[in-house]
Image (cartoon, rainbow, N blue to C red):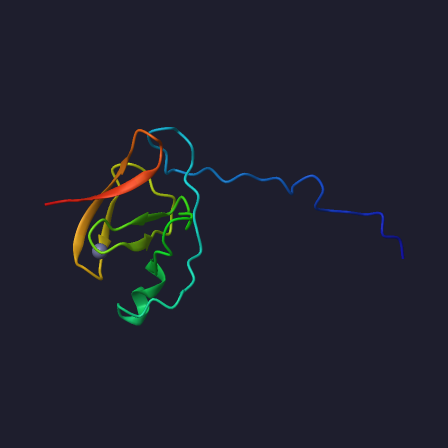
Length: 110
Ligand SMILES: [Zn+2]
């Protein structure tokens, strides 16, 4: 039998439009979250948090540190300034802000 026929060649680069456009017009990336052993919250929420490993621990674009308890909060999507996140371990409501050096940080919303 011949293996020449390849039906996917013409259609394998379909791009799906993303409606999550905002400040820089770049579609947000989405992330699959895995549980990392964070036990301070109920099981179903554990994948949204992880322990900060200290200086040298790189934050992903979907992660931000809680300024109150230093836990890393993880989002299903890439974080942008203005996003609101909730730190369940210390019950702080936070808003994501961009610092002059470009990295994202969370500030407490009072
Ligand atoms: Zn916190």
